[in-house]
Length: 289
Image (cartoon, rainbow, N blue to C red; front, side, top):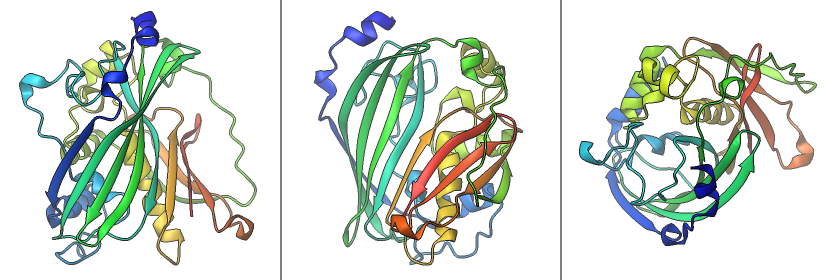
C-alpha cells in the first residue's frame, strides 16, 4: 500500500552489492545496430563499444520462478521489496573514463546507493538509486547511477496520451537531428537484447489493462541510447558525461524527434538534448559534455 511504502524501512537493502563478469561479444552490438536500422559493419572484436551500449550486457539470468507478475525479477533480493505495483527507469547519470572494447572481459559492480520516499501528485513514490561501476582490462571505464521509481496504480491522464497536449517552446537555436518511430518489433527486439521481461513493452493487454497505458511503452533506456548516440555524433572528442531524465511516456508507433540545443561555449561545451513528441512535448531530456 502507499502508506506502507512511505513508512517501511528499507535499510536492509542499502549498500547491497552485485558483481557480474561479462565477455563483450560483438553480436549484441550488431543486433542493436540492426534494431536501430544502422550499419552493423564496425562491430568486430577490438572495436570500441559505443557510449551507453554496455546496457546490452551484464544482465542477471533470473530464473522464471523468481519473476514477479510484471515480468521483472521479484522484489526483495537485490532491490528492495517496495509494495507499489509499478516500476520505471526514471533517469540516470554517466561519467566516462575511457571506452569498452568488444572482445574484452569486463565487470560491473552494482551497489544500492540511495532509497528515497516521496509523496507525489498521484500518490507515493519510492526512488531507488543503483550505482554501476563498469571496468575493462584497463580499469574503470563507466561510473553510472540509475534511478528507478516505484509508483502506485495507474491514474488516467497521468499515464500518457489522455492528457492535454503540452505547448513546448523550443529554445532559440535548437535543431532537430532526426526522427524515430518504435514499432512493436523494435520494442520486442530491444526487450530481448536487454533481457528486459517488463510486460509493458510487449504485452499489449497487460500494458493497457493492468497498467492503464494507451499502448506499449517505449523503453526509457532506448530513448536514452538514442540521445546518447546523437550526443556522440555532435562531439568532436570523447564524451565525458551524460545525464538524462524521463519526463513522460512514449508509446509504440508514435513519431518522436531528437532535438539538440545550440552549442554554448560558455558552459564547458555542455549541450541539452530532448526526445520530443510533436503534440505532448519532451518525453526525455538530457545534457552532455
